[in-house]
Image 1 (cartoon, rainbow, N blue to C red):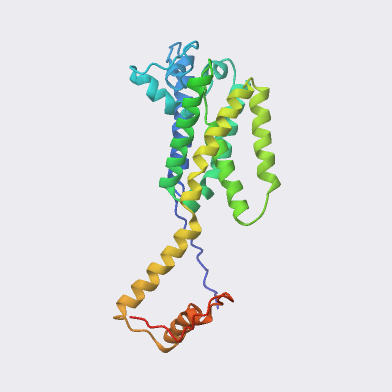
Image 2 (image 1 turned 180 degrees about the horizontal axis):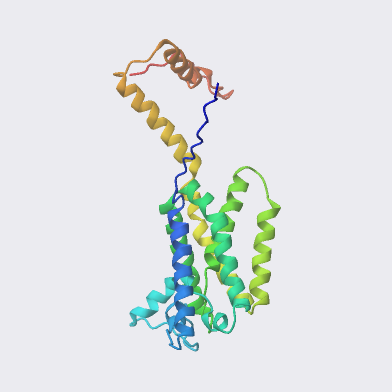
Length: 271
């Protein structure tokens, strides 16, 4: 007898699991490649003037309230990089910061996007970029370029998740220290580093407003309410017993009163 050959089928689906994170990284990569192509072609794209944050009035790109481009720079600088340094050679420090930022965002972003949702992560990125851009326009004479505020925001989100479990994870602290050292070694001053950290912290504060635990409890309560509605408001025996026990626990009869309170509680009525 001949044994039938087994056919192995591989069913794999490509999932765009973190749309905000992946789209952000793709846009940064496209802008980077576009700048490199135009520079090698002998053209001057001038992307460093668009993807760079405004500076103070004494800087090279002062913030002008009447100029729409100044408002664009407050947000678009996170998509750019130090194109002048990168064009000088891919081994430059500017390129290392650029690729390190994208790698960290790809590593940290999908987990945080799954936890908080794509919309919330997008809002956090927006707030981090805007806050750091405004601070740079107020206090610095050189432009802020790159996604450092977004990187710090991701690091803080992971730290908050560890804090919720009553832990302090050394790994994320080490990542933050490594990013700070890398920025400092490549010419970023203390003021710029503080601005990026402040922007990341400000953006990550939205995590307190959108706690996944609260959202899960609300989802469970909505599911119970929907089940009761489907049953026409009727509960089975076990649910009735659990409901009665819950009422008994919350009854004022079981609450300890102070010694000075001579009030006698006979019973409770529920309407």
